[in-house]
Image 1 (tube, rainbow, N blue to C red):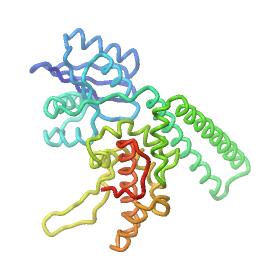
Image 2: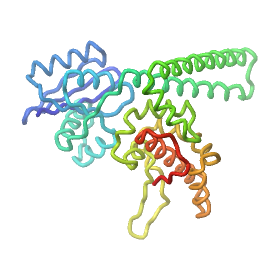
Image 3: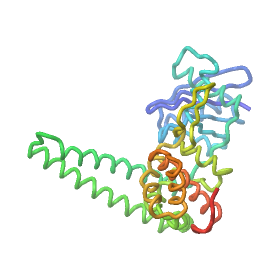
Image 4: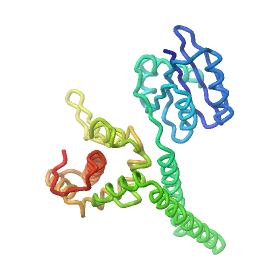
Length: 319
């Protein structure tokens, strides 16, 4: 098997392929034309049985990953932290795009990461809409904060208010598109309805979970789900030194942010999460630790209803 490492940039793709002991590199634009050039290059090198590996870089890596998957190649998308740790293990002192691509190819050959399955077209559309909704929400918040700035002139205030109105209209439009997407795809709508049966998870949060974790029900266990979201507790103990546990935050930050406010609501209205919060409070845990635990519990509940296909049951005790 040949191993292909791709260092994904906004404008360029830097590829390195390992064939036996030979290594070759290729740089192409990160565009449809560039991706076709990359595939042609692979075919010219008689590379057919390929395991390709890329870092997870948001939207910049998805197009090339989809194209390689359609060609029948095995594709893996890995957390950049794994590649960084692998580079440290090799004690690399040089960092260039070509070096990084070769590093990813060696990582792929040694660790053979799990294959990536592309989401369905409707899930890809949902993910794009949800991420756009989050971006617009952040912009709207920034503009609202500007209205409270000192020495704000009347002209600037009018401009900011117009922009806020435009952003709110855009948010309403995206909401309608998300609703239509669920209407047009009954299996996706069923998953959303299962998630919204959990107190604390509304339609917006359900859409974010399904967009960021399209294969959540296929994870091997709840630990893998929690780790994917970066919600696993990180313990530090070395000799006599022991520090407070914190979130690992090695995972999907979009999903993690989406669960913060729902967790606060669940601590009030979800009987299972509320009970968990009360127990942690009795043990003297800090407020943020309790919210983090509530976020984990919500994600575990989401995994449970999607895995079982049954709506939330408050009488069921989750692990």
